[in-house]
Length: 144
Image 1 (cartoon, rainbow, N blue to C red):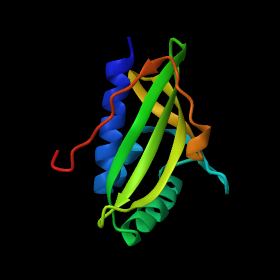
Image 2 (cartoon, rainbow, N blue to C red):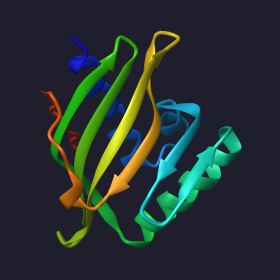
Image 3 (cartoon, one colour):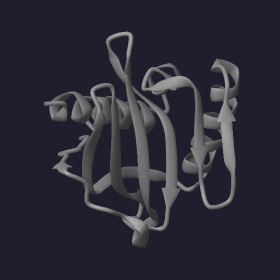
Image 4 (cartoon, helix red, strand yellow):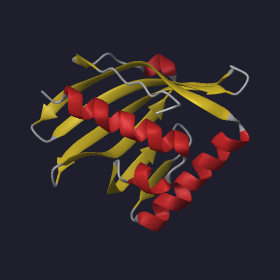
């Protein structure tokens, strides 16, 4: 039931992320939100905190010359009428075709004010990936 809406959310997210479009990236998130990596947990309370955090992320990706973001596998489960959990296995590719990083990200997604938005992301090693109930088809062509 929610598959198309979630695929569209991730396609918007990928496009904004690839273009490093701060405003469009932020539109995919509900604030406040949290980002968890094995190294740290970040609470993003407002737009300025979002910009600071994602500027850091975009800077790292630019320095690494990341040109492609591939969703190797993606799926989601409905937790309630307004709450979903998605798992996406990502591979970030550099301009020479080398793998910069791969990881599994768990997204908590809420339906609020007529839109699905991410409010929590937990990134882990790819070995921590899980297959949830419904497969997702997430792709973004650079020319889109």
